Amino acid sequence: MSVDKNTLNRLLKEFDQSIVEEILEKGYVTGYSAWRLYDFLKKYSKRVLYEDEEIDEHECYIVLLELITNQYYLLLKINSDVNGFILDEFDKEFFERVMEKFRECVKKQ
Image (cartoon, rainbow, N blue to C red; front, side):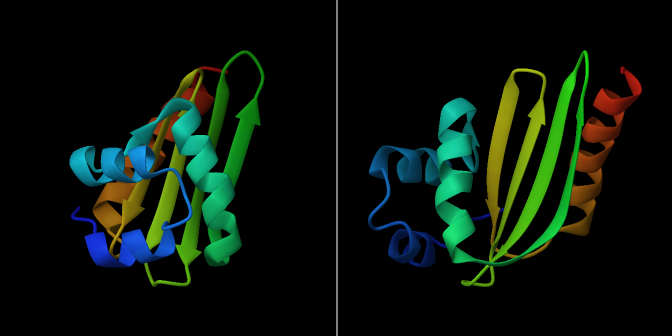
């Protein structure tokens, strides 16, 4: 999952550059940074491709945005752990692995 630095930087030029650097370095962002990036990228999304949540004893949330840059943003929240990923292209296998983590969280309800 490589992130195209030029496209990402154009999209995020007005966003917190430390978060941009983190996602370029690690391939994902965590915690509050993942939520901030999600809120920012919603403005640049074509549509929400998938969204689901289960809130009870465990908090489980997943959302997949298709961005105007033809990239994708995937946010997964499992209890207090939050991870956000920018994908250059849709990776079905990666999405299925993330969905499995979401399903495991829901089953713990």
